[in-house]
Amino acid sequence: MSEASLRTLLIVLGLVQLAVGGWMMFATHSFGETIAPFDGFNEHDLRDFATFYLALGLVLLLAAARPGWRFPILVFATLEYGFHALNHAIDVNNSDPTWVGPAELAALAGATALFAWLTWITAPRTQQRQPPGTG
Image (tube, rainbow, N blue to C red; front, side, top):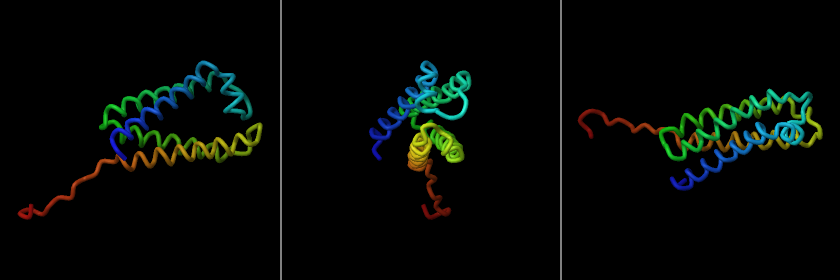
């Protein structure tokens, strides 16, 4: 992937995180009814979760401009989305309407795969050392 494409993708992913976090923070009831239709509604908890998305969005935007930040931020994003997908897999049949659970699980699994791939392509590569006297 070219540097320009990677930067663009990180910016888009950062903006998506900011949009989700903003929706959770500032239109909590709308988010809860549309995306989080599970048992019980807790406005405070949804705003707490929003802080994660807002922070991840900002650091992804920073990582677009700072290549050295990319790998650790993407490792974190992969882990968070992986755990988030696992949690949705456990509760996949508990949403109302029922189609939301599988749709969210698929979206989270896809995001996990995307973040994992980006982590892999940005991983630091070590150069193989030459034996003394051969280089």
